[in-house]
Length: 89
Image 1: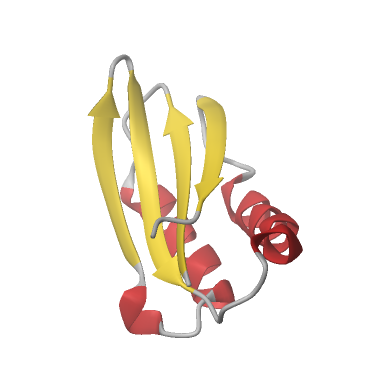
Image 2: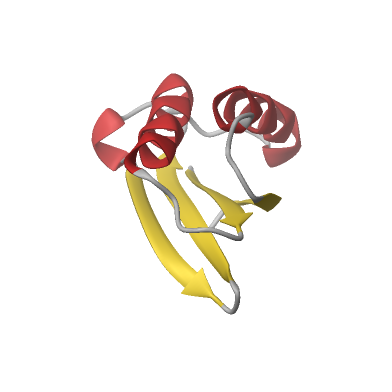
């Protein structure tokens, strides 16, 4: 299944931030080649978007696991505003 984790920050990210997102996704994915991280400006915020795949499961069963894993890796992000987990079709 496809997973997207988006974090909004109010200052431009650095390479360490992007590496942290890749590390979090690598702990959850069933295919390391599926991990993609991109940055896009959304209004006054920067969206750091991590796409990856996981084994198929009920979304309600994995959403807490995804949130917990990413929070371990992003605890030190400066100017953190919000995070969003979605499951694109």
